[in-house]
Image 1: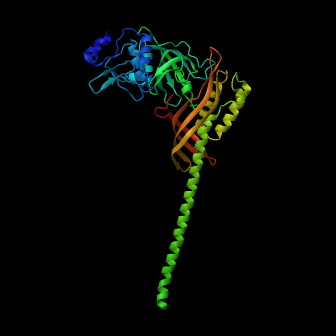
Image 2 (image 1 turned 180 degrees about the horizontal axis):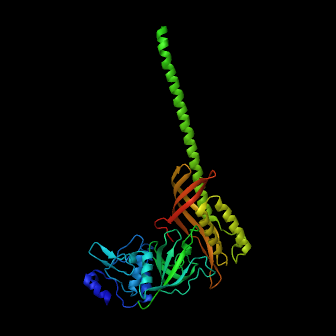
Image 3 (image 1 turned 45 degrees about the horizontal axis):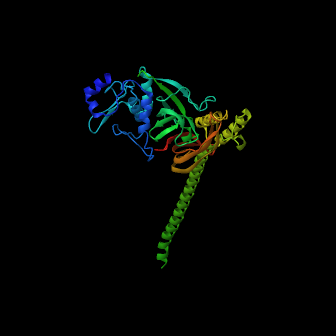
Length: 214
Length: 194
């Protein structure tokens, strides 16, 4: 209701055709991700024309999926730099206005931590931790995974979990699967390990459970 | 006639001295350039070796293609890897490289994941600048790796052979006559992240 009111007040509702839901549905979020992650026939990029396309599009894509799943935008039209705000809308026919948390992985993670009920960390791990470092524990469809490639940039990537099965592009790898943009991948093994050759750094994962009360 | 000869002699000497001086300066320049080129070659060799080493260390011997890794095997791989890294890295960057090596070995410890091969290809040093004992280098390369993961459900080994284009910025110091990497920044090239 708060979102609809704020969107109507700014006229943004009329400019956005993004789906509106009232509670977070992991299934709906995953369905949206699967629909817009990439062109499965052509194998190329696919973007929802109702949203802007960022060069590094991972956080924008996951934000869209969370919103499609029913996660309410927060602090609509507020200070774009504050973690508590998470929104996007089309200001006019040329420009989009969005919070940093909508389009940046590290800021999206901060938003999910600050927001209530928001998201809560299920796991924070490196591949070297114990014997089960390569297996997802507790994460489920609709949850999000943040990645730090260990290159000194901090968290710089995010993906949304969409189910369990076999990696689309590494057929032998079976496990929890994620969708993401930037390098667009559909149903990729959650750790992205079969797609990462860099041995000069360690990848850190943060798995965030999205509360269904959002 | 004699007057003419006297007037020519100083000019001839001046020309001779000039030629000798020019030849000397040219020789000095050639020697200096050769020295600079030789130094640059050393830096290039050091960078190539460093990038290759950090991607290749931690690989187990062929007879350890699967299964739990013994402490003895881990120690042997760590010792060999550290020795190789010390040839190319120094200071905090060496510590970081050794830590990554330890992580690479740890993740193979249970036998769940096993590295089989790794390397660097298409390496291009895009710039090399040397200022006395400090060199800065930028480079691009494709890193690749081949490894397997043990699938829980059926115990099958799941192979993967990813490759990613990367961009590097390195600082090297000349320490005891040898160029060593003291700082390394890297990032995935556009469109090359996992």
